[in-house]
Length: 320
Image 1 (cartoon, rainbow, N blue to C red):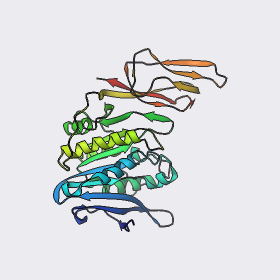
Image 2: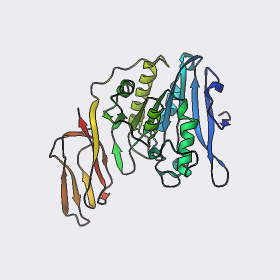
Image 3: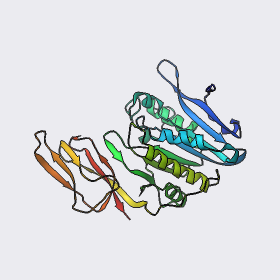
């Protein structure tokens, strides 16, 4: 039988019991009928004081792979060996998760408006509550994402590789690809950086589904980090020499509409001038063939055939 889960209106880690895994419903805001909107919080707190590692998922409501990563991590923790605290938020964006939508109720992308505003719009207030009620408690942040609708992703990390702590966090994930990406304003990772909290973004596969392999890979990297910083006794797996490091990345876009076929697979190396996509009209005639502007690795790509002018083709990483 599942025990009743305590409802709280603030996350006070000093009041969380030691040597236990605790579950909470954290009230963030109220909806139009005055009913609290809550997010699930899982806290594993050891007997010994130590760092606080935070894991967040589903800041976009249709990005689901991070949820079972967090669930499985807490199922695998040996609380008797824990030195510090792990906080997991399986779903940050509850309203969008329930609607199976990427964006918040007012149509805004939460990961573009962090840290929000205390007296702002609907989405700004929600973002502000997340940062001030949850993120500020962390010493490290791992924010789990996936591709958006109509696209697929490799398992890759976005991190500021010029920061030595963040660089180590990224390498420990043993991802397929790491992209050097200094945090930009408006992202959860960027806000954490402004609060002097080392943070990385984990892009764990594709939207709207659970992918066992991606979930397993994401979990391994998190165990590596926990072991490395001494929160758990996990043995750190050797850093993979197969990880591809990219100095930067960019999306390639269509300049006209039609039915799009993207040819290379994710993680594939493409050469400059290589054909990467074919665009046809509704009658099946070839309108245009797109060539890669540079040598790089395919981080993600569009899989939706219907593509308007300005639609995405693929995400290309520039290999170091």
